[in-house]
Amino acid sequence: MSVERTYRQEGLAIGALAARLGVPEHRLRQAINEGLGYRNFNAFLNHYRIADARLALADAEQREVPILTIAMDAGFQSIGPFNRAFKAETGLTPTEFRREALSRLERTDLSEPRREIG
Image 1 (tube, rainbow, N blue to C red):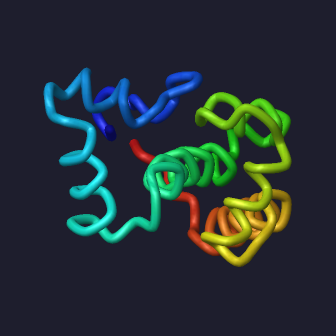
Image 2: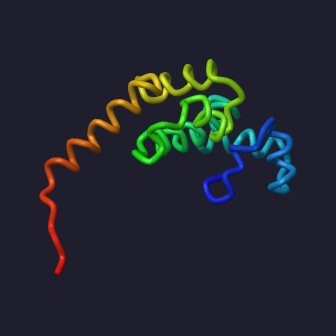
């Protein structure tokens, strides 16, 4: 999931992922639910998608990229489910998370002295 970013695939279903991995669907479901502790396949996917979105939202170079674009790039189909899943996992809305993350970056940049080389 992390290397190939399969979670970004539009319409990804557990059956398709099981076929791609060459395992029976019930075994994959059991591994996701019991082995990894996710309540269902969507919670499993959303974990990866939200981690991806968190990196983008905390990236100063992507400050101007709309949150909807980040959500869709991460594999969500619309903003509503993204906002709900994001807040459930982080306790913050995507906008709040971005504001706090970029604020921390700015404070860090200001607090570290600039060193010239040469």
